[in-house]
Length: 491
Image (cartoon, rainbow, N blue to C red; front, side, top):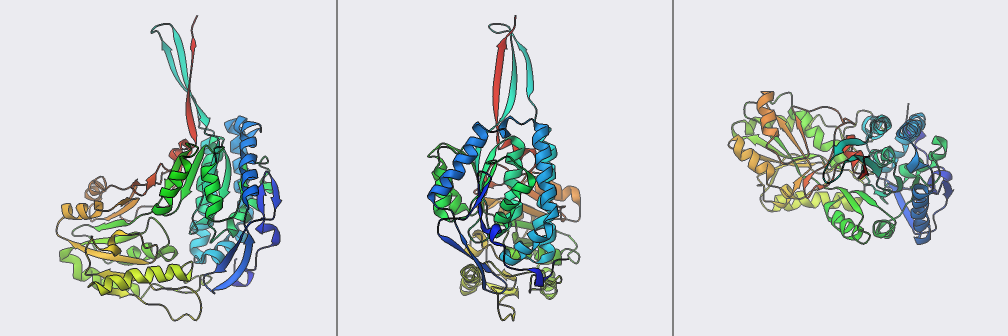
């Protein structure tokens, strides 16, 4: 079992970059990595410089153009990806320690969603690789007899750039799909949480992937810009804020690289008329508080039928008493710290501004009595409308607004009145009616009555400003494939 006492500083080898199958120390500016639960500096990681970033891109290019990976059969790629999953499984405790320490995710969430889920997803990609197949179109006779096949070819070199909140899950969502398709990768984690991804890089040798197939860097915006602007990169896959996503898209235009962007969200949650509130109120508040609210699919706009409004607020206040904010190594903890003090200040400012403009804190608020750590309590804000900034902008903290509505049509209008469309949630007494409402919502993922687990065979992605393209499932792999039409004359 992982315990706080085993959360030690990373080994020197775990702080190295992986370029062309070789581990080396970064020669660029250092990244200062903090433990958000203690405010202590864990380590300063040397990032990549311009030359190292260029060599990583070249290594991926050579591994694709000259190396064996793009010419591996789907069955061979499947075996290699399964082997990588086995290696990660054998190092699961180390990955848990790394994520709890650098992200501050509660250990129970880390074990399940941060570590075991991506390992399971990697195994799904390994199986899915074997199902990539050509489509034979048959014969055609205008103007001459011919036959055709549409083959699925790997896109090429992928620049994969991940966010800080789920470092391993986001990395595997990108490299697992890219490897299944036959692509090579340069992987760049957030500069706030590079340790887990660098640890992943240190395990590639153990998985015996060919050199250059996966290269792992560390760095800030200048490294990301070099990756996204490179004419040797064929596809850019980015997870992060909508604002940064716009920059990535502009930069990728330099080489006309394809882009996959998984961006922000301001997800609505609709409680339909007549829904029994007792069993759902606590799960609702726990859902947007998960990972301290640092999740792009968090349901942060709660739409409640006006006749049930008072009961919802009363039950919400009681539910908040059950949410535990505290040490991420304590297995009773539901909500850990935010990633940095400046991010906590931003989250708190959204609440302060809303209150100054007439909003009211209906539950939670403030900070817990912790001597150290960048903690904030979950907060439920009311007396605002859907046009207020707190209801329209992604906060990325454990803060939700509750909004009353008159009828279902109004609830749907409010839900869809957002620049984002990543996820939505519906609770209803009758599943068929809830599913009908779900079909009217402009969101890439809709969960009804609690939904289910994070399925590796389902897709994630958003409408509107929540992104371009899809991750996970066969749709995620297709992002890294290019269809190629081959036709030949028949005798």
